[in-house]
Amino acid sequence: MNKAQLVEAVAEQLGGRKAAAEAVDAVLDTMVRAVVAGDRVSVTGFGTFEKVERSARFARNPQTGERVKVKKTAVPRFRPGQGFKDLVSGSKKLPKEGPSVKKAPKGSLTPGKSGVAATPAAKRAATKRAAAAGTAATKKTAAKKTATTAAKKAAPAKTAVKKATTAKTAVAKKASAAATKKATTAAKKTTTAAAAKKTTATAKKTAPAKKTATRKTTARKSTAK
Image (tube, rainbow, N blue to C red; front, top):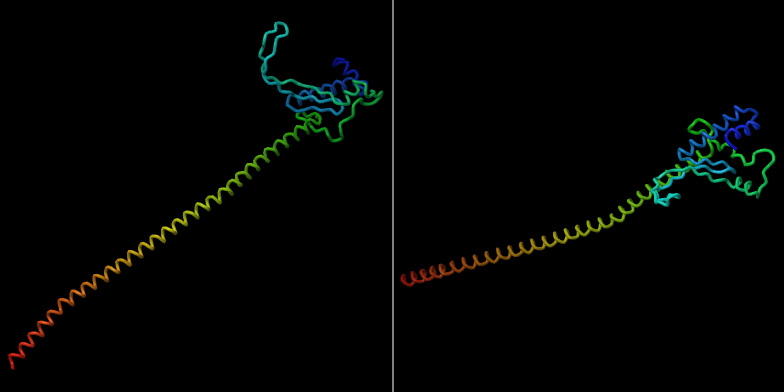
């Protein structure tokens, strides 16, 4: 079945060929635009259209057997739904009337970029983006928590260093005070000893003078007699 035959088949259900052609064109255009944009087009019971990235690789030319380098590219891929598979395999019977696959849930269709009603792929893409944003936010929060924990762990070390420095300063101050006290005590002792020596020397000098005076007085008394 080609596109013209597809339009004719749809026209039998819609009742007009023009409306059927517009409907087919709109559906195909919407699906192509969504897949090119990187969205998944999923039709319940029918299948999923999506864009697949293929990395650069080496392949062989089937005619010559020559090894050829294939560049990185993107290709469309269709994965049939379970309902479609069951109908093709014969495990389920094709209904005589009505849609062969289940309809999408009510409210699942949202306006697409092209202005035409889109498939649930837009919702799924939005959900993926939200999940990615949530993951990024979670990673940032985890990084902040790690930094906070590291800072908390480093704080006790800084406090310990500060305490050790304070203790060293206190010990140094005590040692300095003790040395100053010893020096002051030694200076006082030296001053006291010097004063005592001066007093002794003065006393010694004064004693002979007193003796001489006594001798002179005794001589005077003898002469007078």
